Image (cartoon, rainbow, N blue to C red; front, side):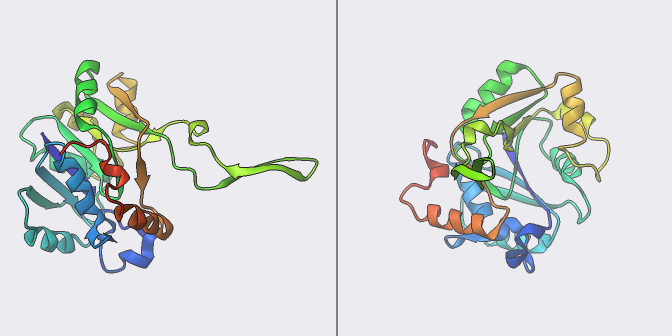
Length: 236
């Protein structure tokens, strides 16, 4: 199985770091977050990567050229204006008509890819999405008559489930992507849902996107641990 990593966005919410590089190249403990993501995938037996680049794709391509590892990495410039649906479609054409793992290049999680794949196959759908709990970001307060009675962190279990990336997609998913300027999340996914072709694999372990400088700094601290949380329970 090959892994497609979506790495073409502008990263505008992390503009402090992305004026000269795409967000997946923002460093975490001396390595781009893209490296950490590829490392956790590689530790689970997938070493073939297709990177869907766009914004400052040359930065990613140059980095890939200098990689010293056993990974087989192909960088595809999918265009600056292309949306996630288009990026996935373009890269799936290079996946030799087999199922692929697709994920975003700006987040880390200890998703068990073997279990995800097994679940996908048992579901018998064209696509499986990993559902996660959103990280608690804001203090939640309860008040009565204008007086705060309770203040504390929001419980993730109270937040429902959201798209955590880490999709398994069959070749037939390409037929649900209508054009390159269409986001996968608002185009193909609703169409798959309408045809009952999208399964949800629930992941209750670690998951953390990197949308802000604060989140980058949090990941930096976690990366310095002996075993970062996104590698906990990961094979290898």
